[in-house]
Image (cartoon, rainbow, N blue to C red):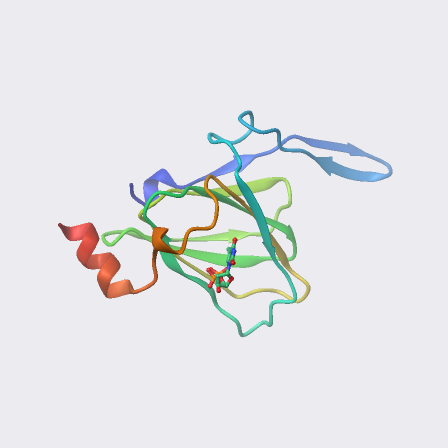
Length: 135
Ligand code: TYD
């Protein structure tokens, strides 16, 4: 997997004078079954989240409010994606290092994950990640 396997997904957006509504249905709008949902909130502007890659897990990140930058790195290529639209998600495949930075005030990040939380699925050491990607 590489950064080119990471892409933006547009979710349905229903607009009327009361505001907007988007929805995500399991196995329909994203290419995996959702096993876990988590979210980041009250993130200080100086904070950096992520700083890891997953061995098997795929996930979709959504900026439900505010904005932040997602730095993607597969060991060979890098890409920065700014998320700031609640009707869009960024799919991040396995074996891609990600760092989340530049959180705006009050931003929230919703994450839809293909797997339950398993610490052993993480690369948390960048050098180890690079070594694993090169063999
Ligand atoms: P971490 O992976 O460092 O968060 P992020 O990548 O967003 O910066 O997770 C922070 C802590 O929360 C860590 O101790 C693991 C724990 N955690 C869970 O227990 N369950 C979960 O679903 C997640 C995502 C994290």
